[in-house]
Image (cartoon, rainbow, N blue to C red; front, side):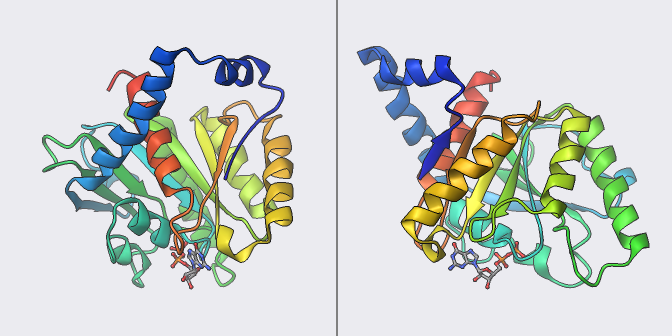
Length: 240
Ligand code: GDP
């Protein structure tokens, strides 16, 4: 399930008047996305602090979300792996930025996937939250190769105050971001449509938000091909 901001009339109109050439391009992105994620994907780096980031190289897309939103499951579904993102969920690594190289060894990779530490731990103290925020701020503001952050939101609950704080941080950092709703299989069709519409409405006011939302289920594979397609399109648009 995918939703676009209805106020984005130009693109909606464009969607309806695709020429045959453009329609072909549409198909290509889905196939490009499939191929992109069918390749090799390897863990390359864990950064516990900003002094230890890997040198910039291939373009990066990052994945953020509150803990338990389904981020590891989505990364595994995207890359067709069972345990790619397991490292991020092991104790002690949950505060790190984890980097994966997609499509070959780090030097020749097409894209890097960055698993950002989950936020909103009930048990996290003030000090830990401050350290997390500092790491996020420094990464978001200083990373020229970062193309977009995909912010995962639990489709059963929609945007919560803690998610809004993350979006505030992204807006302040002027980094493009796109919402991905998770756990579609746990939501009734009418509730899913409502959640999509409500979320689109609230991000409409946000300057750095990309006006399209994809509703996914890692469990059932729903929306995964669309997400890969969106990433392939983003790479092409940015000239990669
Ligand atoms: P993370 O903490 O954000 O990395 O979340 P996980 O990927 O570890 O998932 C948290 C919980 O949500 C686990 O119990 C998963 O099995 C469950 N989960 C994740 N994605 C889905 C989904 O698409 N559908 C359903 N029903 N459960 C999911």
